[in-house]
Image 1 (cartoon, rainbow, N blue to C red):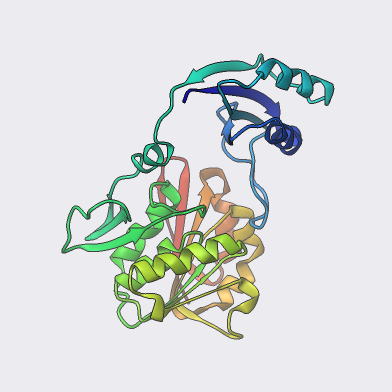
Image 2: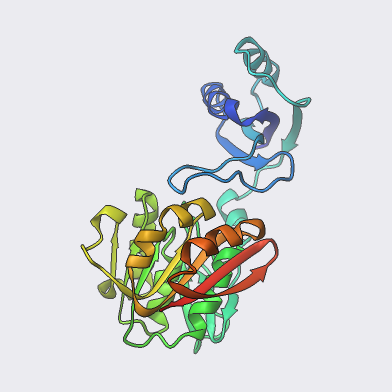
Length: 291
């Protein structure tokens, strides 16, 4: 079966209403992409960041009347920022096409991230078998890769790790497979927590990983190693808590920081930590040891 793809450029504030209209009109899938080649808008870590201009692509059956869909958009008063684009899409195995994008990647000394549907390249290495599901964290983004490389350099044997804003659980699971004794993975997104549990089970570390919302972390919990790959504003906002969660002489890694934000984040931690900085692309990882 062939399909019709309708690509619509719209301002951020109209994304939800346009998505609802397209679904009601029979769209079988919706994809949101950056329409203006900009980085994600900074926001609080518990909110979903989104670009100021979005290209919303809707997939319809070949028989759908896209002219009527466009008329409904106009009638709803949703102003489009560019001429709509329509194209024909040949049928394909959509799930397989998505899976084919991901390959095993080496992210540190002896550490690989391997999608659950592929065979490890180096079976004798430390392989984190990952299925991201709907949660953020595949190891391909610079912020995650920087954290993984840093973890692979540490001697984690017998240490306790806290992964704050865990997404898919990739950092906590990697730390356990690298020798950590125990890890806590926390996130506000219930979907992320479920995916983290599944990935822990897939990597046979579920007995050493506690997964919960931030409010459910044990009172007074401190880690030898704390990693937080979230957003710069959140790292500043959460600085007192993340500092308290790190044991004296423990180590911290702060990621999700754009280069121009690094000084502001560092200012929130430098009185307590001896900080070092690593750069990749437009992103910065701050690491330090607690005094």
